[in-house]
Each structure stands twice: as structure tokens, then as C-alpha cells.
Length: 326
Ligand SMILES: [Ca+2]
Ligand SMILES: [Ca+2]
Ligand SMILES: [Ca+2]
Ligand SMILES: [Ca+2]
Image 1 (cartoon, helix red, strand yellow):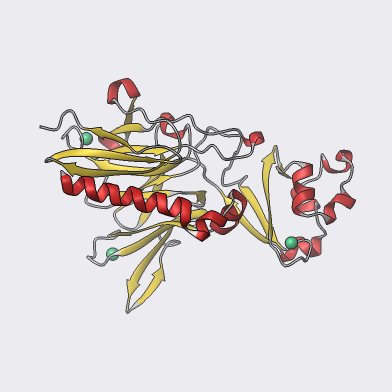
Image 2: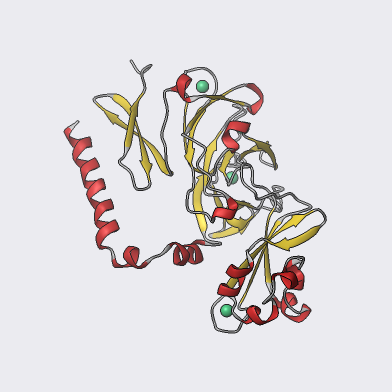
């Protein structure tokens, strides 16, 4: 007990220290962090995907497909396309390797942005990100576009676009000139051709079901799991049946008002079922109720009992114990 306590205290001290004293942390604003994290890899995990006893590396992030690398002759070989992952791009924050259907092939649970926002994305009509130094000031700008009907429009407000790319102020001084502009009409064809384009085809949090190590098939997590972005997943067989269960947590409150604050989740227990399905339990049923931006969930044993620790942004750690734990 003491040991757990003191290591917990050390962890908290380190976190406080970082918050208050780390010069890099201090300097970062939401905007600068956003610039650094965009396109950055969010999570790496080792897995055995094709049961040849050699481990694969699974990588997820934003605006990129799920990547699987095989380590072969001392180099990583990208086998994602062979596994059918070429259009799996999402805004993924986290992944968990679990065999959800007990077929001995590891499946991948993915925490994504969810389906409860004004963003829409599909294979035919992906969210689209333009990345370029549009005004030649040696800083890269990013503009997000989304389909309305059959056309792709920028989803930044005009004043934000001016702020980001002041030269556009001249061009689109009047809202009238801007309001029906399609994303790819904002700049000349020459510039658009040289612009890097990134896509998101899927916003749902989901499971990639491993089909005997040859292909992955994407299945959505239940509706309740789509209410807000998922940033953490813990897996365990809580009710000791045949299937692994998961606890998910997330939320985000720092998005622009026009996109809506996405904090509808209070963490969720999902019980594993037959056929790779999950059944969600509400807070009353599960006892789990955690408000705020959950960024990690871990299990720690204290006095031989399992404790589940939730790390929440700008909040104390929340700790639950499993009542079924004998
Ligand atoms: Ca392998
Ligand atoms: Ca499986
Ligand atoms: Ca620029
Ligand atoms: Ca279970």
C-alpha cells in the first residue's frame, strides 16, 4: 500500500512539476500544441497480427491510415495496404490490442473523434486538410474542408481564415465573396496542385476485426461510444465470462465553439459479447462516472485489490475499485 501510495505521489509531483516548471510546457499554447501534434503519431503498440510469432508494430494518429509494420530482416516493412488499411484514416488518439472474438487473432480497438460533432466523413466524402505555406511566410497553414452535398467547402470562418492567411483578406474582404467558395477554389490551381492534401474517411471509434491475419474489417463500437472523442481504453475481463471487456474515456472541451464542445461522455464500460459485439452499461449500472477530459485509465493493485485510476485534465485523479473483486 505504502509503496503504491508513494509511487503515486511521485507521479503526481512529477506531473505538477511539469505543469508549473517545465519551460517547454509553459511556453505551449493550444495553438502551438495543435501545430506540433497535427499529423503526429498518437500511439504505437506491438502486436502479433498474423500469428507467425513475429511481432508487428501498429501506429495510429490523425489524418493518417492505421499503419502496421512487420519487422523483417532488421527493417520495418509497411504491410498496411496488404491488410486493407489504406483508407482507414481517422483522427485516432489511442489503440488497444484485444482479441475480441477469441479466434486467437489479435483485433485492434481504435479511439477516434466519434460521431457526435458537426464533422462528417466517409470514403466518398472525406474530411480534407490542405497543408501549405499559402502566403510564403515560411509558416505552414492548414485549412479543413468538409463536404456539403457533393461539394467540398472550407469550414473555417472567414475571420479565422484572414487571421491565419492575411493575404486572403484582400481577396475575400466581403463575406459575399467567400460564402460559396469551394475549398479548392480558395487558391489558384497552381497553388492547389502543390498543396499537400490529407484525408479522414472515418470518425467512428471502432474495432478492426482481424480476419486470420490477412485482412482487417472495420466495425463500429456501439452508439454510446460515439458520443465523444475517445482518448483512453483499458481492457480486462471484468465479469469473468468468455469475452474481454473495455472501459473507455475521453471528451474534449477545447474545440472552437462552431464545432461544438464534445464532452458528452462520463467514461463507459463496454461488455464484450458474441460476434465481436459490445454492450454498453450506463453509469448507474457500472458505477463509473467521471466528468471532464479523461486522458488515461490504468489499473493499479493496492492491498491485493484492483484500483482503476482515471487521469483527467485539470482535475484530481479519480480512483475506482472493483466491487466484484474478492
Ligand atoms: Ca507477425
Ligand atoms: Ca480476434
Ligand atoms: Ca504561411
Ligand atoms: Ca467479459
